[in-house]
Length: 315
Image (cartoon, rainbow, N blue to C red; front, top):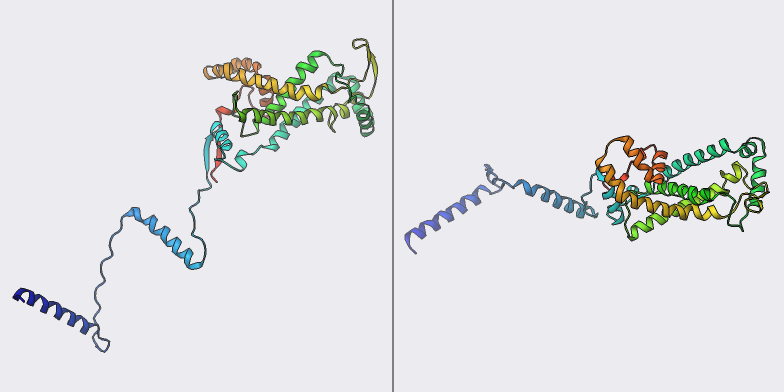
């Protein structure tokens, strides 16, 4: 062995012997060696170390590792974005549900306005409402209702124009409180037609209530309790029939779809370039169903949900 290698071996051997001497338990002078320096970790590795610590702690306790959760803080979405996310099942829960409280609230306000108009203009309705036995006369009215007759004796404009507009209003009430369709414009897609059919089903329930429900023409005005001869019809009538049960929701659907088309082709362009409330009010006459439903929720007749944004909680 060469001289340099021999010297190195002696040095290492001496160092090992000295270390064993320092760590001998029976030595009265126990010497503490300095700790090795802790290696510095980059800041980016800190979250990873925390995640591994959570997993190890969970394994020691027999539980599942804690998964990161989203903060329960609000997030701003446009109504179109919320509509799309609800349809694509990217957003769930309350932000995608129909607000039945608002649907019923607007419907009850509309119902009150309709009955107020009837009582103000119809003397027979006033007498029945103020002087008659409410529940007895309501039962008689339901018994005498002409369920096997189509025409109820009302003028053409009442049955085939007024009632479809009424259906368009009730359809719009439902649509404006359904996050899955209130930002929709006319489009030939399944989600559009299914949404409008759901609104039509609600309109049919409202129409049935208006005709024979507890707060209806049959109960409040006792329409149908009297029978008389009508020279115009050439027969006896009690002003009841099934026409409004069908024309209101179906006519309302057709009217509502027509308003969606007008809204897409013309009204959006006007609202995009005009800010004058008088001009916008005049333009909203093109969509009376949407305008009436807006008024019932205390919005301007020209308001459109697709232009609004809402705070949606991240869940």
